[in-house]
Length: 348
Length: 129
Image 1 (tube, helix red, strand yellow):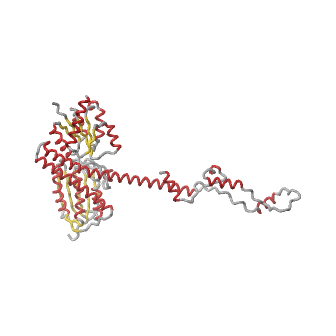
Image 2 (tube, rainbow over the protein chains, first blue to last red):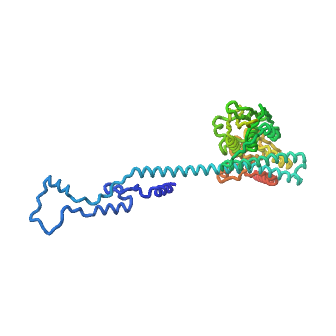
């Protein structure tokens, strides 16, 4: 890396003389070959002549010049030989070089950090894809193994296996759609179509969808709607937000807990406010700040679920694209509340 | 005849179910735990012949748990098998050697492979003693 920084310095400041030569300060003499040659040239040049040569030889030696004459002679002296290489200690060049080195070092560091982040994200995603896939393959192998006579041929058990296969397949589907959605968000291609949406109907549909999972985790799911719950936005995108919030709430709520979805007009923003609250493990203050960032997965679900670390990042981007706001309130062991607002459908 | 016992430490109910269904019909006794603490409580009262440890556990990882078990003279002879979804990189494999794990198996779990490996390790242990 040092070599890279030096190279950058040379490229940025090709004419700056960092290692300027100075005939008076011998400590710089050996810096470059050129400097040494120049210095020596100056040293061996004959002294400048102060008088012209002629045929006339003075009969007697000139008297020593008086002080006044000496002054005059000095004044009249022809210009001295070109001044020896001036001390070229150039603070600007040094500062600029230092800045360039720092800049290059900073750039390299950032690039490395970004590469590390990218590879961490890839590892996380690979794990998210591999986990349900290996469960699928393990179940299928078990069914083949048992049906070949190694275990009891119990249709009821195979039926239960098939249900679990389905859950794993769905998890795989969701991770893949999260990845695609995140890629789309990154390319800035999110333009929600603002159409009337019945939010309460979407929530009811999702509750029906999540009921088997909630029952398996022994978590109670309910909806409390105030008013008609009509918003304006893109139904598919809003469904995605609710999907992510509800599945998170189930994941982090222990057996016997509750997940409740409430909606009604928001007095502060004159938008529609929807809240997904749970009686789950809750979050610390530092965790809330990181929640909505990409690839942040704070912990594994209580019922063994994994997540892509993309769900809340996607939810935030969707809500904000609608002109709404999303935020979380939580305390450790006291559950969490995720709120978001959406524009209310006009002329409802 | 002695029925070998296997501790299954995995927080995924899917793998608990799959492993039990493979090993029970083959004559193994299953002890199951979903966290290192639960496994520790089980190990207070009995010492299984084999422990299948998932790498990615909540709290303490399977490797760390294996390392702790190996330090306890009671579990010196226990066969430790680590299960993971990811095929490990160099550092991970190095960490495994140091943790005293006998075998490292990647998920998905293939019934014949799991049975064959456990059988092999158990008979090797019998010959050694």
